[in-house]
Image (cartoon, rainbow, N blue to C red; front, side, top):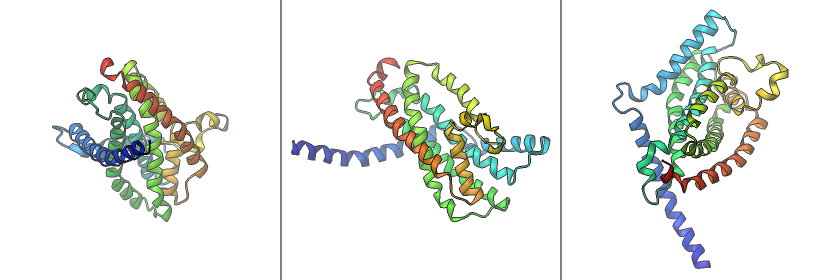
Amino acid sequence: MRVKLLGRMFQQQWQLPYLWDLLRSLVDRNLKLMYKRSTLGIAWTLINPLLQLAVFVFVFQIILNINIPQYASYVFCGLLVWTWFQSSLFEATGVIINNQPLIRQPRFPVVILPIVVVSTGLIHFLLALPVLIIFLLIDGVQLTPWALLLPLLNLVQFLLTISIAYFLAALNVTFRDTQHTLGVVLQLLFYMTPIFYQIGNIPDQYWYAYGLNPLVHLVTSYRQILIGGTQPDWLALGMILGCCAIALPVGYRIFKRQSLRFVEEI
């Protein structure tokens, strides 16, 4: 019994470096495939949110004259958080269908694929981060030590996204309408997240339903540490982590159970 346990521990120690190398290789492959034959390449990471930002500034500041301080930084911060969340869930939903050669490889660790997708989104977020810092400096925002909590918020968002990604990736293999349904849900969720408006504009009677959206608290926390120079809402972050502690093992187990039938279904 003890020999078996030691053997398993030895095997796991060797598996971790292998999984880390595999993760790096697949993320690198994902980035190359994403921008294959693209003239602008990885610059699209910035072009998309910057174009959205230009539209929001024109509509809500020039036409509707919404009075939000440091509006460009305010919107760009929200857009980066949202883009990581949205693109990761979209790609995770089709990750099994789009990687059939890998799925058919014997003993390939399928569970790593949703992690690859969310990690790729994190890299895009980090690549766009210097541009956000430039916006903050132009708007006269002074970064405080609370900005050092950024990796913690990245971790919370990573756990939240991967918890949902496992469930969606498994569900889409059996129910191919999942990806189309997700598009509608994410569009509604975008307007239910304070990307281009202030959270204080939400009437009190709708707050209980509105506050159930974890992106509301996540986007607000990013702005609190980067723009406001204050600490994030620890209670909200703790509740998100508590939900992840339940949702991640559940989503992982559903994915693992469904993975036994991936080769038959795709």
